[in-house]
Structure formats: structure tokens, C-alpha cells
Image 1 (tube, one colour):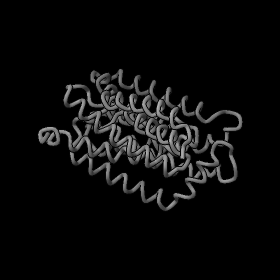
Image 2: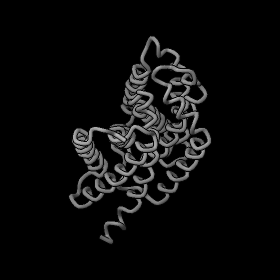
Image 3: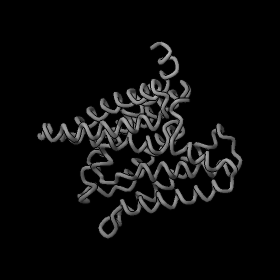
Length: 273
């Protein structure tokens, strides 16, 4: 057990922090009915990192996350602008277009590098196993900065998410939309190297869905989802260590089991509180 914590304490700590952060954003995303926005933003971050690779920027250079966040900000601005098309074009369609175009451009750029395929695979799957305490510190600092913004504007973000689908008054504040996408993007940029695109989507959506199956309130969904996400992440890490499995894939698979289990339980306890 001591050997396990020696190797896995930092990956577990990063997953615990990301579980709380992504579940919070996930509850908002479900309210806004823009489920695939994190995939799109994560793919934009991957495109930024791939651009850095093509420009021969060293992998550990501070310029890499700067490039990735630049693409994220462009996406945030675009999504907050296309929100006004919701009456004619669902925003999920716009998000899907951005995702597939960003993914295709990243593949085209990666094809120009002899290590492009490995680069794309690492961005998709992440490298949770190799998380260091320095990575944990970066994630914690980014999470603290994002938390301060959302604490200050909590009621405005909540009101906007509640009004998002039906475009009630307060549901079309472009500045607030941009802040939401940009802060989510910041968490993605800091964690995409560690978690990868697949695990990021899982951490954002599955816990929020599980929370929604048992609670009607924002706080209830967040607490249930974050608790389940934290426990499931640590379980996935433990299984990957014990069975010598790819860590990211093991965690995502555990979340699949979590979703099926909570779905079946929700059929028995059919009255969310």
C-alpha cells in the first residue's frame, strides 16, 4: 500500500481536484444543454499544442499552454457570439462544427511531424500516471483562480445557466458567457496534458449526470457528482496500478460502470431530492 501511494499519490490528488472543478462546470453545462462544449474547447487546446509542436516550441515551454489558451479564448469568444443564433441553429451544432474542424486541422498539422501520431495520441489519452506534484500545484492554482471568479459571480452564472435553454431575460449576456467558457478553458488547458481529452469529457459530464439523477438542486448535483467522481477516480487509479492497465482508460471505464450503476439505482429511487 505504501508503494502504491508513493507512485500514485500525485495522480490521485490531481484527479480529486479536477473532480470538484469539472463536476461544478458539468452541472452548468447540463443546464445549458451544451454537453460537448468541453470536447470542443479541449480540441482547441490540443490544436494550440499541436501548433506549438509544428513551430518547434519545446514541449515543456511556457509558450505551449499560452498557445493552447489563445485558441481557447478564440473559441470562447466565438461561442459567446453564436449564442444569439440559438433560435435558428442549436449551439450544440456550432460546437460540433468547431470540434470536428479543430480536430481535422490538428491531424493535418500533426501529419507534418514524424512524431505527430504519438503527439495526438498523448493529447487524447493524457498521462495521468506521470503526474507530478508540480502538476498538482499548477492545477490547484488554476482551480483557485477559477473558483474566485465563479464565487464572485456565482448567482449571475447560475441565473444564466437556468435561463440558457429558453433564452429568458439574463440568458444572453455575452460577457458572462465568455467568462464561463474562458474559465472552463483555463482548467482544460492546465489539465489536458495530464488528463487527456477523453478523461476531461468524462470528468465533466458523467458525475454531473449522476448527480442529476438523484438531485434537483445545483448544490446537490455538485456534491453528489464530486463525491462520486473523486471515489471513482481513485478506484480507477488503484485498478490500473494493481492490474497494470492504462490509467486514463481504466478511470474512464470505471466511470462507465458508475453511470450504469447510478442509472439502475435511479430507477429504484425514482424521486430526486
